[in-house]
Image (tube, rainbow, N blue to C red; front, side, top):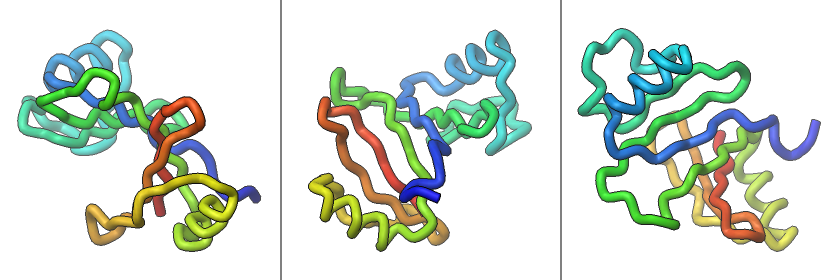
Length: 121
């Protein structure tokens, strides 16, 4: 197995969560994985949609900055500290490892063309 366990999330920054839910669920027929069963998603910041092996995450950002809030690829790793050390030794610049929720550790970076990505455990 390689350093990453695969692409697990694609994060799309959105401004109107209900409009995006309508598009992806009612037109493209994706299903909400989490939080499921809501009638109104306008107050949600993070909504996960099932797309097969990779999850499409709609991430609310009301003040979108053109060119800064781009789609982000998120790769799962088994051990974030080891992956972080290996990647930084290979010259990849990463943010510090942060924990936005108790069961999640994340570090972010950019590929050579400036496209954002993250590793998470």
